[in-house]
Image 1 (cartoon, rainbow over the protein chains, first blue to last red):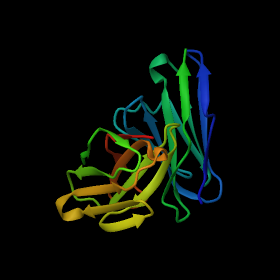
Image 2 (spheres, rainbow over the protein chains, first blue to last red):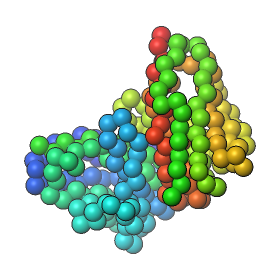
Image 3 (cartoon, rainbow over the protein chains, first blue to last red):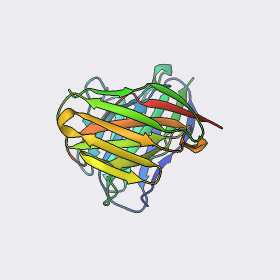
Image 4 (cartoon, one colour):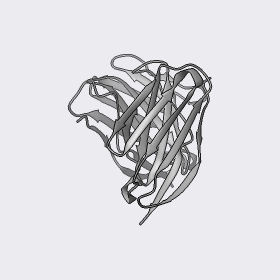
Length: 114
Length: 109
């Protein structure tokens, strides 16, 4: 079956630093990738949609300068949280669509900003 | 935008029991999916079911698109069924999905 690898699974960073999260489809090409954040006991909130080689489409209220998305190839998308602050602490999840597998989710990244 | 409501928000079952989870949506959609998020956060796609009925083992799902709801049935529940079940809707395969708030299921041995 389809596998989406998301790294790191857990990261702790200091306030003011940047963190990069990588999402890679291992055995298929993803036409579209999605980035979500999830707070404890809450649903997934879509942050942005990205297609290879084009700029990401951000949802209303998501700061595009803070959450930088790069979709460099059909198998790799990255989310960089710039100048992270404690309120950015959350569970970030990527999803890749393609390869005839529908939507496949990464295992998530738990970000803690101290 | 489209609203997605799931019920119940929480459910506790004894192992072996059956359950029905419901998803209501506010507008016509042509993409509806059910996902299971395990206690470690991993989401697994259970069903792509914009209409009709599908079954996969102990799980089955029915969507009545004209009445804007979908049901997920879990029969003979097992402790490994525990987690959060999400319904998500969209306007086409490959497009963005809007998630409901989920139903948190806990199956006790």
